Length: 87
Image 1 (cartoon, rainbow, N blue to C red):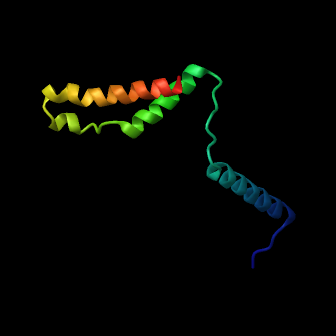
Image 2: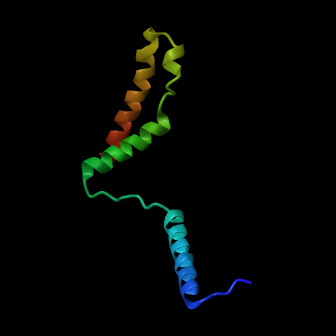
Image 3: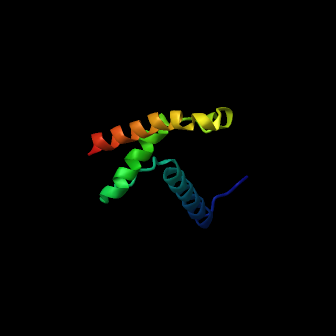
């Protein structure tokens, strides 16, 4: 039979509290850091837009190098549109 002494009960309670705190900290959603720096904010915005509209990295390996300008034009146009819209 397991007997709980006051010292063992305190250690058990402390261990349970630490486990609960660790679970709370590791499962809490990560907040995005809001930046007051406009350059950082714009760079973050443009990076998100590029990720949405980016040509896959496998495509240039399959397509001939001569078609690179054809792939670059829509990407540059999308970036210019995003910059103008953010303006």
